[in-house]
Length: 431
Image (cartoon, rainbow, N blue to C red; front, side, top):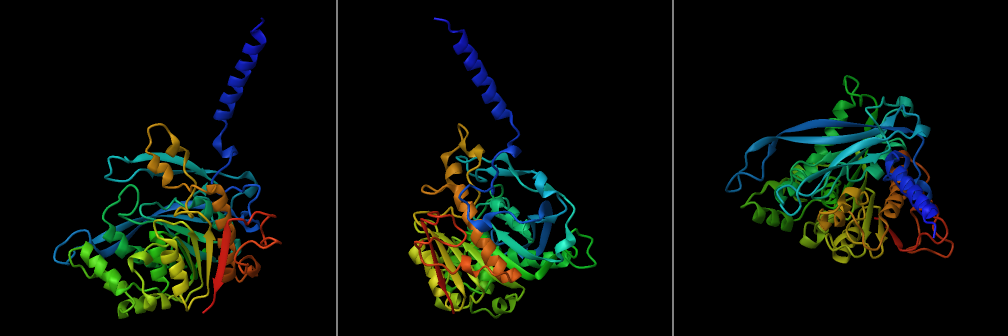
């Protein structure tokens, strides 16, 4: 038997495989790209996308992780944000950017911190595109733990549609600096408000920042995932309950620092910000722990899009996210539910680094959904968030994409390809 042809074929296959592996990953599928069955509004917009990293400092904040007898020292709270914006970039050339993130959790030997990189479709430090005037602002808040880069599929997508998008690294709540939970309980809403004020300052005419004249902070939306959802709902008017204050005190040796974010507090009521026009809350945490009561939820009056998995075992569904939706009786609100999904209905798909030998399976599970394709979830989120923000921040006629029957009708859902809305539910309630 002549084995030379077989050997030759094997060599060709090996060479081809090596060539495929060596192809620049920018030519392949990147988080946020469209699957063939992506809904209509998931497609990127007409703007090129730039991205910049910025360091901020929030001075004189309570250090709730230190102190005694409910008394806390003050500290200057550092904060890193990532900013995506319409930029003077040739869209057809699809520039790529390398993001640097981390697997693992600080101070957890079973999940050591492991840096990794992944690609996005944006141009680092690109020149802003002023052609659209001052763009609406979107502030994005991650989970616990998380990072400002957890939802790049969505942040890039929104920037391409004419938004300035600012994602926060919440200090003491990221993978790299994770510390006690009370910091997250107190600081999430405070961080959001501080970043909004900083963006307004940097957008001013006298500012030397690239944001000067680029962003309209009087037209702002908040997006939060998990603990980020907990925070943005509070900023939007859902004041925390007496039970939340009690829980916080038990965790901190009697601190009452959270009182200023409770519904009964005059300080809280004075903090509500008319610049915020709409809220998107992915799997918001807290309802099952009594963080809100009927009085607190009644304070939410802004248009709100809730996104949840029907099997969420972190925030809860029936007594968690759905209960918030039902209790927010004074808000025009939507609830998008992924049937049989758990808690990971917001983030990027699992990074390839999470699948390497020796890496804890928990790193993959931190991103993954057992019954859904994560890229598919990303595309659906892009579609519905585009519709929701388009209505409330840009005055676009997108209501047909949101005012849907509870489940897929025989004729399908507007914007979805035939038979492709299966597994989704959409509910709408008005004040």
